Length: 362
Image (cartoon, rainbow, N blue to C red; front, side, top):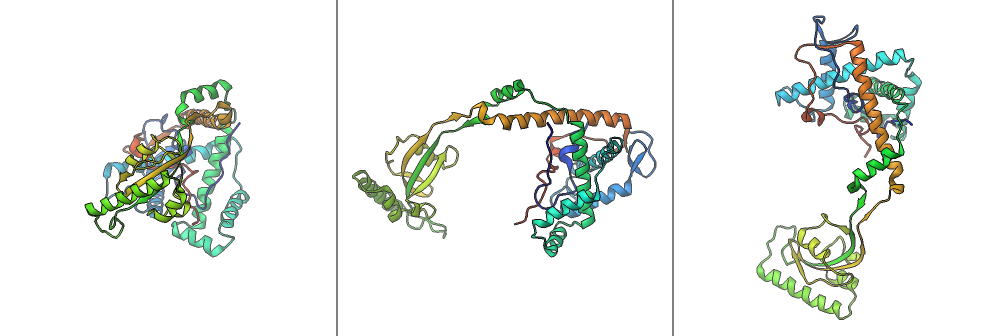
């Protein structure tokens, strides 16, 4: 059971850290390196010039989104170490792929390029514009795709024996009950009586304006209680443009989605009762709950496949992390002093998963 990673969206980025950055441990201490090297993987060298080129590419593509030399010096240094680690682990993967007889063909990369172009209706001009907008060239995109595809193939090979037992699935389910609990929801509708001048034009409602709105809300409530149709009254009186024409319908409402006063009233109402006028920052509301769906826990059978996928990914990650540590030790990874890896929460927020680093066509 292995998980195939498809290239999502339109254009991927240079930073394919989601798979590689897991192996931050297990590197050898810095030793004697060639004068122009920032890292060495076995007999392979990453030169200062190569590293500077990659940093420049990333900074150009992500202008304003990554740390800069002129910004937080410590964060910029951490980001440099992450980029270098990515370059090191791309080399680790490449050396290992050669030993495993794993390759990526030009046809495979072209197939991915063709798939991306299809999202632009095979419009070469639109595709070229998208590349330019992300400061990419066709060659740099192909290089990134090749690195990602080679990593995916090696990842699949390394983790192909990952398995998930029924016990693991059941344990995960019981340990994460909150994730599988559907909160109570209430089918709700309302009528908003907004005080005169209390709108987006910057006006300020007076006490008299609020009193007038309250008086109308009380009048309409009395009419509904005496038999008038709620929906018709909403269409006639409501100042909420989003629900007025729907008879005041707000759909299913859950806790945490409405302002406090509105929520408190909604979740204390009995089914079909009409609230007293409820004052919020928007005005006075008449609220009615027409249906209540109690909180419920999704059964294990309903989420078994989903949990299996989650646990499988966890098992694959463990295997991949262990493999990276072991392979780095076997190859002998050395870093230039000052470029040794650090692992902080700050750094990890600067990188993203390859499955979510694409820009979609709008």
